[in-house]
Image 1: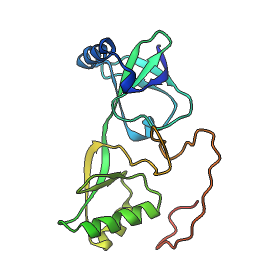
Image 2: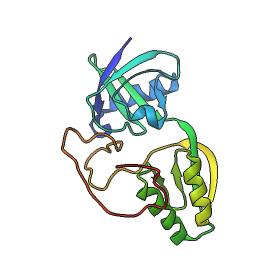
Image 3: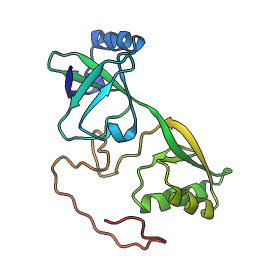
Image 4: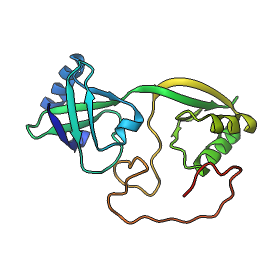
Length: 183
């Protein structure tokens, strides 16, 4: 089983490598992974063509869509964000109400994908109920999930759980309508 141990920046890829990835994609030799799997640094997965591979990366950040991995023999493997169950939050053109929904989800430290007209998060009925009470439209969808990265993070995104061995602490005071999470 090939084991991929290095993440490559797409900007570092040469024309031959880009062509190799294109050929691999046409043959189904790539990974399509959900958000939870892309947050892990060590896992086994099957390519779309059914080949089992291992991933053993240094504890870093979430694998983003189109991320490229390499093994010790310089073989490449591209990672894509798979469609998965998500909750989509929209309003009828009320940007302020959508901002309020984003605030309440952020206040609960929910991984959130933000687009100009919608918010997406992994399904949670308690959060969906809260948002409906707020007055937004909530709908179950299937789509790739790329959560927003933290404002204090530089370079690649950290999936919200890893901080590259830096000490990290924060404190803040705010009230919650419910106590659905802890710090």
